[in-house]
Image (tube, rainbow, N blue to C red):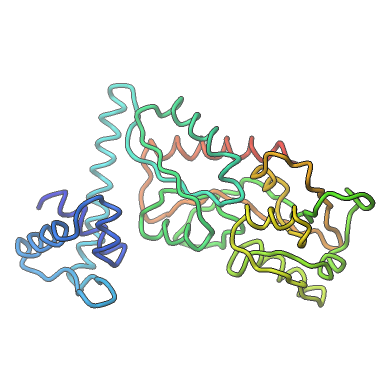
Length: 300
């Protein structure tokens, strides 16, 4: 059994699509299909059911997928061990970051990787929680920084930081820096991300608990766009204070703490439990933990 063919099969099975797998692997789709077919001929089993919506593992394919993940992981562990013998950890590490943190940590995270893991390949992906969960499930991500990660047998969750959400408004005179009640926030024209954004879900739940709902002027799925609209005076945002790192000139904004109740978001580092962790990934977890903690500490 050819390891490359096994890798191709695992990726197609995880992504459920030859098209998505060909993009992820950097191989033409006809060549990918040919290699999977050769594997099926060798094993004398149909491994994938192809239909208009993609490709799903057959019963035999599901069994090979389970073993294939373990085989490929053991190969990676062997490569890492050989790298350690010559004094270097290597391999690919893929990390998912939420948009609110990406600008703040991308540069220091990359610099820390180059220092501690110079022979490892770092891949950074920015996206909201739904995308991050999918990446962890399919194997596209080794770890991700998530907000309010739900407990799961499939995920190892390490708490990093509890962050209060604050009201972000256009700079003005008067009530700057004075706390504001959540009920008062609900009455303001708000510019919020759409569900299932974790901040939106949290805000809706906290407002529901006090018997109110947000007055939504606009739903915008993009932090830069939200803050640009706030800067123009078209509404207010409810986000962590460090999201202002997306703007070079933060003097256009004012922050107000929210009280009665406070809204606290949990930031966590998450990795899948069903895939064993390599030594390179263990060091990567330490790096991500340290860099994120240092970055958000500035805004406490």
